[in-house]
Image (cartoon, rainbow, N blue to C red; front, side, top):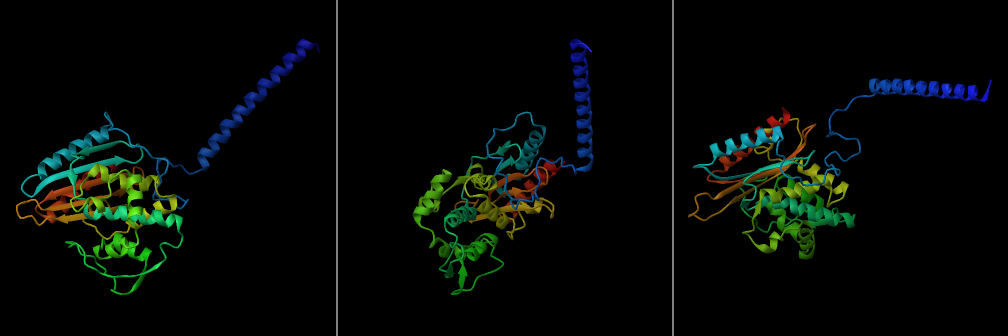
Length: 331
C-alpha cells in the first residue's frame, strides 16, 4: 500500500469512528431522557437541600414587564377590582406583585404611604436572627416574660404566654410572629440595642421606625423588600433566611392572602393592623398583608395595604385580590 493509499485509509477510519461516536452519543441522550424523571418546572418548592423556602439565585429588581400578557391581564383585573372597591368603606388600596422567577413586577398605587403597624415585626425578626448568626447561644437564652402593656389589637392572639415565666428568646420570637402578639414586644426589644436596630435598618436602607416615631409610614413597595431579601437570602444567611420564612409560613392569621389561595399552597406572610383614634378621620382603620406564595411553578410575592372604615371590609378586599392574582398565575 502506497503512502497516499495509507493516508486515505486512516482518514476513512477516522470518519467511521466519528460517525460511530455520534450515533452512540445520540443513543445515550435518548436513554437518559427516557429513564430520568422530567422536571419542566423552573422552580421546585420542595427541594432536597434543606432550603426550600429561599432562592438565592434570584436577586434582582426588574422593571415592569411591558408586553407580558399575564401581567397585562393581572394589572387590568386588579385595577377593575380596586375601582369597584374604593368608595364608602374603603379609601385606599395599594398592591405590589412580583414574579419571583423573572423579577418582573406590577403595582397599583404602590408608592402611597401607610402605617406598617405589625408588619414591622418582620423587621424585628430579621434583626434578631442577624444577631443569632454571630452568637449561637443568642436564641436559647432564657428571659422572664413581662407584660408591660401593649398596643391594642383587634385580632387578639389565640395563645398567650404566662406572666413571670421564663422562655427562650426563640420562643418569644415565635409568639411574636405566629400570633402577632404585641405583649412580647417590650421583652424582646429589651434584648435589642438601638445600635443593633440602627445597623440593620441602615443595611436595609430605611429609617429606623422605632426612632422616627409612631407616625412612621411606608409604601407597599418599600415593605415588600423585607420579604424579597429573605427569599433571596441576601441579608441573612441561608439557614436564618429559611428559618424566618418557615416561621412566617406557620402564622395563624388566615383571612387575608391565605384565604385567596388553595389550602395546599404554602404561604409565608405577615399581617398588620392599625386603628387611629382621630374622630375627625372617618377612614381610621388600616389593614395590610404581605407574603410569599409558593406556587409550585411560579412563586410570587404579593403585598396589599388598605385604609377604610371597616376591618372586615379591608380583610375581604385583601383576600379578593389574592384570589385574582392566584387564579391568573395558576392559569
